[in-house]
Image: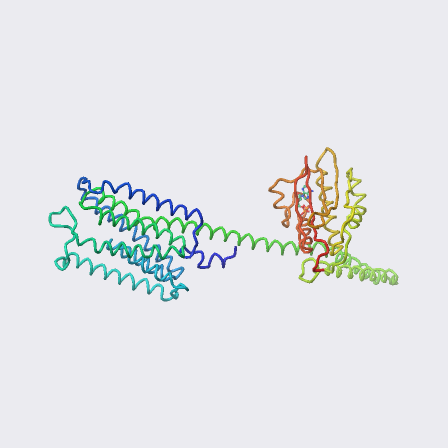
Length: 495
Ligand code: ADP
């Protein structure tokens, strides 16, 4: 994952499509709310005790949760700059201050329906928040005055006897139900995580209105109290979702950051690996050049000068110089972008050549060799020297691994042709084998368990094999030991 991906607006709540689990939990919560609603219906008319103190406490809870939701939504808006989020945040602020959610939800949905979600520029975001907060505040102050100082201008909601609700109340309630239901239906088509939960909130809100406005004919009845309980669901649900989703996004972000850091580290390692391999290879001819140069100087300074020795030393210097330059060439071929000089190779003879070269080494370690070469192997295209290097390295590692064991030391080297026409060279030993953790890391540069090891062998082997469009893998042998497998494509259409 790249930083760009985590930075994209796709990661933000408004755009994020819900996972199956998220969808199921939304359906489950909606189901629970609806069942609770059905369960309450038969008792709506039953009167309970008057709990006047309940209202200020419920309103305080709703005020705090709505206010926090508004703040979080404004924060999301300032990152994603989505205008629909902005309207929703204002809706929650309005709800917090006056305790009506429906208008904000409707505005959010309408803006979301626009094809290219309109966004707000960076500079205007803070100004927009400032203006809208002031506007909502003024609006709420005006409405509060109307409901208190201007009460005579409004029709009564609670009847003078203090028990029932005015029949006029059903008009604003139906109106609110309709403008809450409309977005729910519109949101059905294009859904994000947030949309899904807003739909659940809208459902709870509608049921709350039905309970406390339409079904509850009496104040302090079961329906009346149930309505209050539903309002708790509507005010806290989006807050809970915002908090949990933000935490989830944060976790994702930190995970991708960690991956980025690891990626950067391993790039540094490759550079270090290159420098180390370079130094390792080039040091020997350079030492020889210096040695021969000073020898030539010594013979020249003799009286009389030994010109024959001088000539020999200078000839050696030239040979070493050529070797150094050849090494540079092959290093460039190994690490550089230039195309490999590939030739047609018979993998069976390549394997035989390597085993012949290592014969005395194998024998001196008291190792029994078993060779099983596939009878008819198609040729491959590759760099002979580099592929030889890979097999030498694997056999070397096998020899060294078996040094540690007392039992049978058997080296199996084989070739085979897989069903999908890939050619494989397999090197198996009866050494201590590798733990699964080791198997994951040994191909990295500088991973070694040997005191004299550089930990570069397998890293370079894998690089060579991958440059041949092949794979190098390791598995465990039975009963013990490691199996290294080099898979190479046969001469394909591309060659
Ligand atoms: P080096 O040989 O310098 O340590 P390599 O990259 O070739 O570097 O190997 C890395 C490590 O992988 C070795 O130190 C060893 O622990 C492990 N390893 C490689 N080949 C085998 C094998 N055949 N059996 C067990 N361990 C192995």
